[in-house]
Length: 483
Image (cartoon, one colour):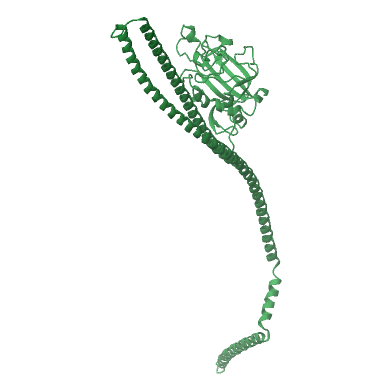
């Protein structure tokens, strides 16, 4: 019983000893860690002192040279993509350079053409200036001559007044002689009276001759003035046409440089995919653009040049109107001789004429034709006879037949102006075979034959005195007949 507390004391001593040992162990571990740290620091300082900075850079370069394989693959893939992009950009740049070179060639050719045309225009302008100077000189001469003639006319008038005064005095003397005022009526006196009468008649005849000469000179002056005005108007119109040609050439160059070009006629529009009839804008070669009425059919596109259907437009027009055109493309109209010529000047065309009478019977004729320009008064030459059983009513002259209006008579009737005698403008030969631009009778036609013959007629179909109800004239290239 007395020995039981000893083991407790030993246990407490052992626990205290174990705690002291643990503390000593912790202290020893801390000292070892500090020594290790100092050792590492010392080694690091030695290494720094022993290896210079350049070796560090070489070590770094060696590390960069021995990069990872994945990084090398990524870098190579990026360089490959960059090379492909550069190649595509170079190919695209080459294509653009080729396009630019082509456009430069076109532009250079157009510039050379414009320079040639400008040289021609300058030469023409110089010639016109010379002509204008000569005309001015002639005008000055004519003015001088006219002033001289006026002075002579005034002198003649003064002489005439003097002659009249002398005649009055002579008449008074003759009357006095006849009445016996201080004079004897002897045979010798009779002879003196006759001599005086002869003198008076000779003076009157001379005066009449002078007056006639004055009239002739005045007529010549009037003709010269009219001729001068005509020449001046021709020069002005030529200058205007030269300006129009310059603007037209500039527009043509712009259109050649632009990617989209205008169609030359309705058949060209048909070939480009247009299938609806209506009003379109066309531009033949070397011409300004203008609107036309197109009749689209299964065989191709037809350019309408004339339409008569209700009498809403007066076709009894002058030359200028028929040359430029009149009416509405939606209704009755005449396209214009110059426009028709611009459309058909480069190749053969077909003229198709559709007619109807008042019983709504229809007839169609076709011609291969060629239309000449303004210098020949737009003469029409039929190349082939009409298709079908209907006899032709168009001029068949091989040299062509010029267009006529009431102010410009080009028909073959020497003693008559067909356009004035009938009505409207047409290719008249002897006034009798056809006139689709004649007078349109809205109501019943007149009973008088001389009035009915002014109507729209086609002699070989309904006769010379039958006015038709409607007509349509349209043109298309001859190649449309081959389809």
